[in-house]
Image (cartoon, rainbow, N blue to C red; front, side):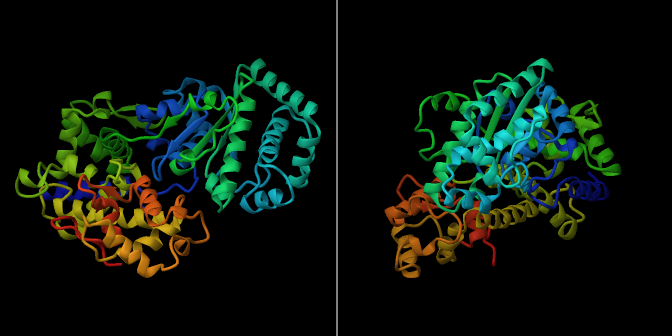
Length: 480
């Protein structure tokens, strides 16, 4: 590839991939909709419970489901979504008329309202809007009081709403996301989520009304389904996972839909390698099925961007594999957010440092892309789990793998009063009451730590680099 062509492709990659790594509940761009096979179950109406780690698509799919145009696009994968009206019952973006925010939720509970009645109040407002009826809604306390005092009118409201959808041959779906924003106490959070799932079970008696709850893994792992018939919900559970070939498919979906001349250039490269142009439908370009799977064509596409090796020969690895594996957490999972951030940074770095390189992505730039993705991931961890940032601070400068006693020694020196001293205003370590071994277990479940066969503690590059720990021969840690 001529250096001028490589430079043009670098610029196309930068223009195609977002600078922001999270959509923050905003409506996604239809052109970037990509549905991995593992996510189809999560989008089906009968799936009530969806579990996923940070950055795998929980809020993305919540926003997509809440958009009528995007539901029409998703109808290619899940046909019933084209006949579904959606309400957000809790989410990233505040909507005080549709659901109480965290402060209002806390006040309602402090005044004696149960989470079960609060969630039924949220559903009642939705149902009343469907059938065009009124109920008390000057304040959430009024709605919750009405729900509690009027079980028969509520039951009739439920039946009328279900009948309205049935007569129109449509479905109603209410979606709940970002439930960690309802409380900073684990025991209270458990009650809030448990009662929400009871309300979801209550709705299952109506065939045209559905509910979907997106949960973080640490929420799902807790005792939130210890109630009668909870198994009916658990049997529908789907996990949002991304295989390496899904990530490469998403990358090319976004590259082929880049704006203007950049998209034309990437579609031209795609057609040269695949043998046919991507298919256009509803204003978006779509990949051939072969390019969505781990295949020779998919490998050839990434090789056209990054070359064959992560160095001068095969000893350093293959970019197609390396770019995903070095972004995996301690449980072997790579999120699309991390992957896209790394590729965008690699393109920017190649523009600046290797403009004459034969390929768009220089292998050293791919390594710096991992550094950038790690930095972003650490910042995201600080948002979701502030305690992780606090306990990782004393470990800066360590070389891993290392004995856990070394880690524990640094923690004990920094926090002589134990794990409780490392907790912030958000949810604390789940098992902090078990001491530093409990914190270690929590970090392993989050994918920050991994335990080697000999018992030593290790960190994947995704976290090691951003938290400033070293490893012999590994990607260099960041100076922060």
